Length: 176
Image (tube, rainbow, N blue to C red; front, side, top):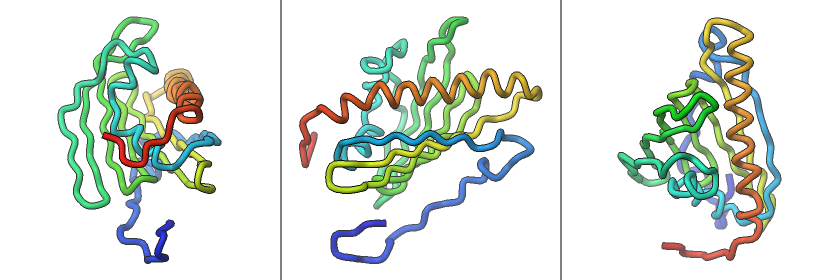
């Protein structure tokens, strides 16, 4: 928690039950990315679904069905077409955010995957972005590993793909 005036936290971070459900979900896998960019830029990325098409080469721009903000919390519900080696799969990307540094992203369509995104400022222009994943078990350990690992790697690849954009874009304190 950081507040420029030293104020105590104003909201709680929820427990995400799926990360503690070993019967239904795989063991958590974490990827850590060192990003040389202001914390705000990472937070704003979640409000830009169009970037999936143009940065990550998805089939089309996700359809945002709902985007709501209430205090420090926000919700985005969207449908997405995911490219796969077997063709296009209809899916969803649903986000619950808590302040600028914590989000829970639920991917569905290919394999149900939970991503806990934790962005921590290190200093004014440097952040640690931590992605922790759990994947719904598919009933077979080999299948869990093959499909789940591939999905985690794809999301991680997309984060690595975005890194040079964050690290080279112009900072705008109050974007549109």
